[in-house]
Image 1 (cartoon, rainbow, N blue to C red):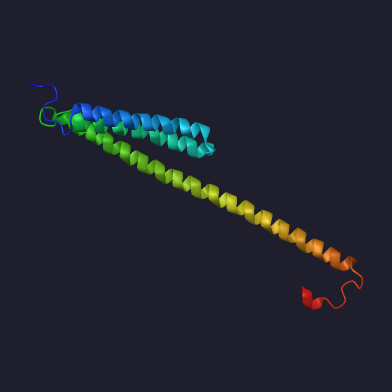
Image 2: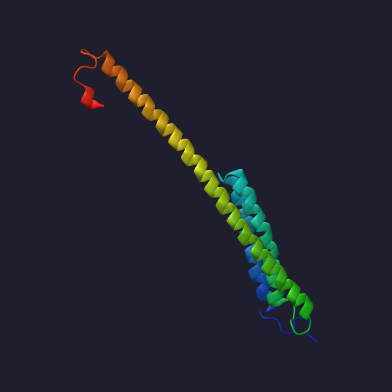
Length: 144
């Protein structure tokens, strides 16, 4: 009996692919620390990276290490874990989307408040300029 009998992919190929994904995930983890990503989104994205790491590991086991004919239960468990990790990443993407939407709503509300305050200041400045002008408010009723 060979160690890797009838897997879907050659074990060496699975290890190379999974390792390259692990390196990409580590790079993104470090990139998140250096960027201007808000802390809430950074935590969500890092949590999704952890779940993706487990998913890639489980998928690597299912693709290239566990023989489904020789060991069906570990094979099913590996693919169940990969699917569960994928589902977790999808849920975290939705959470990240809602967090982004809420942050955008707050930013828009702040912009509206600032714009409204600027408009009020501008109108008050114009009204003061009209009152200070010679002749005051005469002849300017249609200017409002």
